[in-house]
Image 1 (cartoon, rainbow, N blue to C red):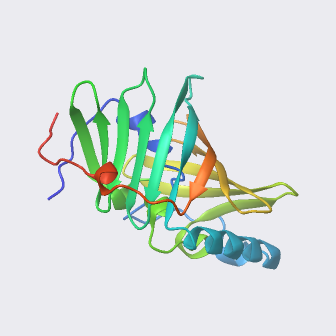
Image 2 (image 1 turned 30 degrees about the vertical axis):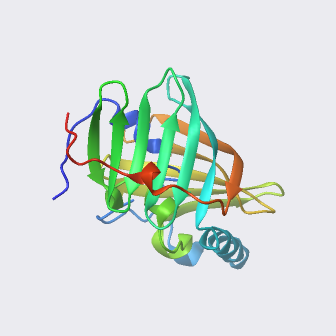
Amino acid sequence: MIPRIRSSALAWAIPLVLATLLIGGPLVQVRAQAAVSSSERTTLKAINAYFNAIRTMQGDFVQFGPDGTRTEGRFYIARPGKIRFRYAKPARLDIIADGKSVAVRDRRLATQDIWPLKRTPLRFLVAESLDLQKDAKIRNITVEPDLVTIVIDENTVFGDGRLTLMFDAKTHQLRQWTVKDAQGYDTSVAIYNVETGKPTNPKWFFIDYTIIR
């Protein structure tokens, strides 16, 4: 059984985990799938294909909180199921997914909060296979010469919200995402210096379930 522990840090920290990318419960489908045009479907398929060809990814991130706070760090992804966001000092958080759970760990206090992975925004990023058109409830798609923006309505353990994903129009790489929470606050994360295909260390994704708050 996965413990569920409350955390004051969890509400703003978990949106990091991008790509928000949802859910054991039903989502509100604002835009029917039939409304997606042929050219938009082609774009979605290209993004799906890019993501599904990647098994490991790592790079740097910068997060902007709803109050304008800027936080930086490094992230590591090993699909399926594993991810780690390590915030640089003075922040002291790690966000870790081990395939079944997501832990938000306070490095200084040696405490953590744990939630089921499938009920957090991380599901898209670490899924075995990504299909945005099938798995997500798309509200809007905007295709520009340099950027593809996909807006998704979602319902997670943290309540109803909206996820905006931004991809490079030519390479289909994920560049940035913004999470609007149930209270209407936005948290944005941009990733850069991204490398794919590099080996990862299983220790990076280890959650010690004996740690409790």
